[in-house]
Length: 185
Ligand SMILES: Cc1cc2nc3c(=O)[nH]c(=O)nc-3n(C[C@H](O)[C@H](O)[C@H](O)COP(=O)(O)O)c2cc1C
Image 1 (cartoon, protein in one colour):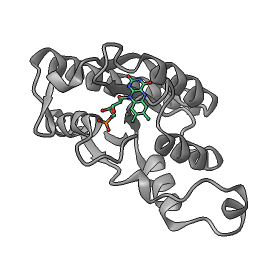
Image 2 (cartoon, rainbow, N blue to C red):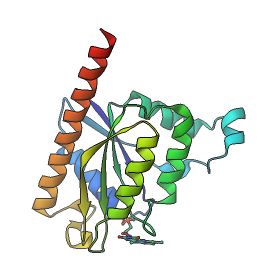
Image 3 (cartoon, rainbow, N blue to C red):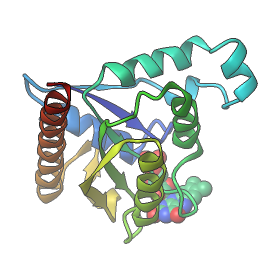
Image 4 (cartoon, rainbow, N blue to C red):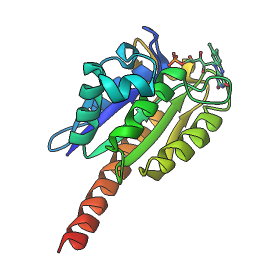
């Protein structure tokens, strides 16, 4: 089972990137979690460019999303939305269609007490329009600076919740496969 991790922050000391790193630590075969290295290398979405000369970075991202069984998206909340970096990546993915029926789990870490509630709601709406299956379970990590250190989640309850989210995503992938098999037969 291949899960692709996407991070909405480009910051070197990103709390959200730390959550993804810890998710990789928690993932053991037969599950695999590969993190997309850098959404910042994508150019800004431009429909003219999409039609005439699709950038290789976009083709690579679409291919990675298409080859994955599910997505784990971890993003900061900026001004009650998601980050522009992640929104831009999603815009490039609309035309590829790779998110159709793709199980997606959402997580957000914030130093604030709210833990990214608005970003979660915003993203769920956008991804649903893109045909993805956003799983109902999510992970919001408020006061994240107290729970993350040295690029990893250190808070045990948060690690347990992250483990549960990965399990929930894996179960959604299995269910999606079963539904596809039923549909195909
Ligand atoms: C421009 C800007 C807007 C922000 N807006 C919010 C917000 O709406 N809600 C929130 O919880 N945190 C907000 N924050 C704080 C971020 O959650 C915090 O900077 C976080 O550490 C960014 O994620 P990262 O550590 O993964 O880079 C904002 C930060 C910036 C720089």
